[in-house]
Amino acid sequence: MGRGLRNRVRGRFGSVRLTDLTPEAPRFRTSDDVFDELEAACATNPDIAEFEIIGRSEEGRPIVGITLGLVLSV
Image (cartoon, rainbow, N blue to C red; front, side, top):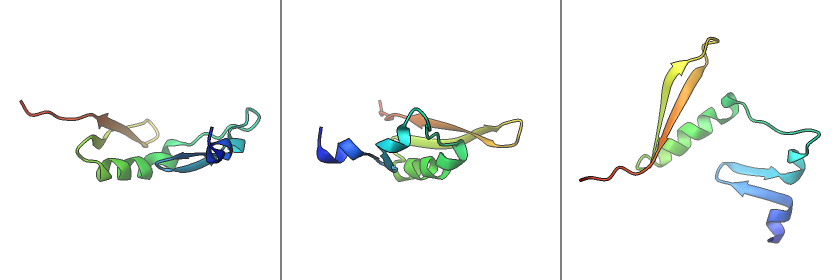
């Protein structure tokens, strides 16, 4: 395992320290935490990703649908 991976896991949307993932204090992100990032990722990659609000929860929060894949012309 590379030196960087021992201390940090890097992803497209930032990085997480492995110490953030301890069983005693797990780190969970809410839908509010990732909404803007997911929308931006889909907008950046419109050829393979589509972001849409497909409904609302009972509390009025958006329910998001993301379609991933390639569209092939026949």
